[in-house]
Image (cartoon, rainbow over all chains, first blue to last red; front, side, top):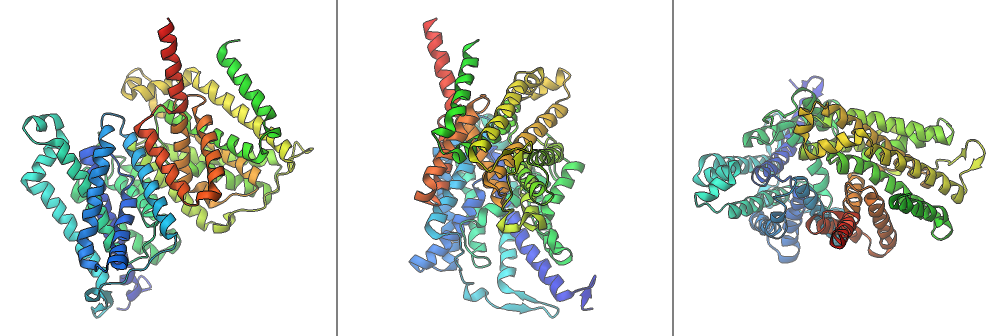
Length: 295
Length: 311
């Protein structure tokens, strides 16, 4: 069998793979949004910009400091996480008592600042970041060649997503976190430092975005605008999946990536809009989202 | 004649003499964006719905009006009307989907739908893709007033603005507007009072989209082209910024906000390049953190406090 629905199986599997790769990014980013939303009730518009900053930090590490891919994969999320905690302490914490929309607006402003600063410094054209030696090349699976780096992206994002799920759902820290989400005042009364947890949660969400950024750096061009286009698709993913459950976010992200990849095979003109169309359909049939609960 | 009425007349008088003092094209740009922001404010300020996709209506009307005038050869007035109808229909479609969700979900849905329109315009054959739709003739108003003349066009744009502003003003102060405010303050209560909240929200959304479309089509007429920038999410963000800076939920706030932002962009564009985005972002952050009532809102609050002290 060399064809599937009249499409050469090589091309089909290739696009399926690419779909899984973009799905991995949707999953990681929507997971970060969901974790932040759960705790802070804020939609982090700066998420895409922080993903971009993460990728740029990875690139800068190599360009200016000679620090390679693996240390950067840790270092960049760490830096962005600290920046995130500062943002939370200095700005976001003053908005919790107001309408949730102000959080969205503030982080939108931050996204503009970050994007504008990097555009000013590096222009809109992309910087290339080469694939680390260990991950260059491809596996020959017989029916297709699987580039090692793509396999690594999928593996790494699945690991990170499931680690997050494990921490939130199965550990003591996660239990405290969920308690603080459910009822902050009562949790505080039990002696748990809720403001600290909020700060750490936001920092973690930002770090997750930066991790995705470094992961993406060798696969695509590192450019100041790489985050903003992605984040709008991720918003649609979040609307489709609902932000109620962590596993839901992961599944929706991966699933939509695959659907997008397959659209590229069968009807390429619609590949840029298919996620939005699905969002419209989901809104008509199940307004709360696939995994969401109606509030 | 009360004091409020007097203020509007002073503003109108300024609008009438402005083209002899200020470059008319800049004034027209300000009027178009002021109208855009007023239309947006109808939704954010008076109904409490934050749409992050209003550029879709602005851009759609610009493209449709441009296409109608340039390719179909419609007279200018009918071309603008075609643009407004197109954005009203789009507003009805987007509105019916978006009002199914509340709060930040509403913002995300409108943003995503607008991004979909952006991609459609990027690919559609009639928009000219990255180049945009260029060289749209301004035509003649009612067949005899030559709009190629900037001063003539200015008074036409001013008339459109005044008419639309009056319509928005009347809407806000009508029973319909009162219901919108009730929904903004407490949606559950409005429902329990027996109002069909979804219908009111949708109507407000369509009206806002149509007026945003009028602004977009008029802007197209002034600059003689429609481009992807008009439909980009940056444009949606900008109109949010204008409204918040000026003061959401105030009648004149969006006008003030649009004037400040357009003037600022005009002054800074050649000097600082892409740092304009940084400045816009910073204004956003400062507004949200420090003065959420906006310029007009703060002045009104100050004025009220002074009156209170006197009494």
